[in-house]
View (spheres, helix red, strand yellow):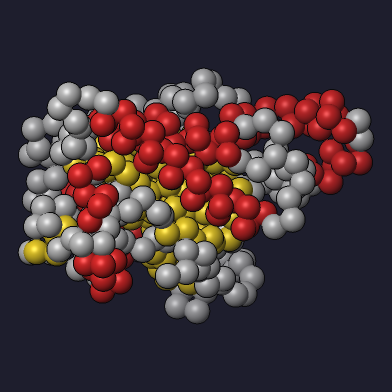
Amino acid sequence: MDLFEDLPEPGGDTPKSEPSRFGNLPDTSNPDVAPRVPDLFGELPEAQNNLKGEKRKLLDQNGSKGHEEKKICKGLVTLKGYVAERKGERVEMQDAHVIIDDFTAGITQLPSEVSRLSYFAVFDGHAGIRASKYAAQNLHLNLARNFPKGEVNSMEKTIKKCLLLTFKQTDEGFLKQASSQKPTWKDGTTATCVLLVDKDLYVANLGDSRAILCRFNEASKKLTSLPLVKEHNPTQYDERMRIQKAGGTVRDGRVMGVLEVSRSIGDGQYKHCGVIAIPDIRRCQLTPNDRFILLACDGLFKVFSPDEAVLFVSAILEDETLIARLGKAAADVRFEAACNRLASEAVRRGSADNVTIILVAIGL
């Protein structure tokens, strides 16, 4: 299987104007807006301040204003994440998530061609919360340590190798900790991670959580949902063949009749059955036609198709009746409302699973 498969690139220029894309959808319950998750590297400066910091850093390291201007003038994509969580009918919340709008400050000695990084991840735990919690706490730290430093020949290949190593280390770290317990922890988790490197999205995925890009299609004049990941479950031919070759079985659509996913972090008792922690990695370049990224666990997609989720979110983002509150920008109010209403609607439609949703606003 090709782990380095790219998504198709869009064509054409950005339209000068777009028609109104959607009518209003029926309003759903409007719960209190979930609080923003603090960045895991502390309070990081906003984009404007980051540019100043980058200029100072470049001058200190290179002593060259010309190099500084070359890097700053590339143009930056800014991403901002919003999250909503619902426990649903489960006894406990086993999902975890990470939002780091500006990941740049967490990495030293960035390659000269890299100006800005962002990182977002959703982890859907099973058999407990320990694997998802461990992955949320450690995967981005391993990524920061493994991220390329200095000059590299091929940024794309280097970052993909970095992500493969990062997932391997995170899985091994959790399994080591799990095996040291009495009794041994049986927890496992999916992982869907989005890493922005300037204008390129790198999406690494294990299991059945998803990432979707909302993109305006110039030909149809409509928004489309572009899947960014390949799901992994044991009913897929290549996944089933790997499991059977390793000596495992697939019964009732599950590994050994128990595990619903064929790739995960943790699940040590199934590693000898062909369950692996090697992610599929895809790259997609963002364009001015892109509106937002949706990351969510399967609790959402049990009751929403990707297209339905994109339409639902888009209608709320275009709702002019949502008024900015004191101290909040209109865009923040709309994205927070869209995130929360989507999560609440998933529960209302009957999703009994944990539901975690991250909406990522795209600014170019």
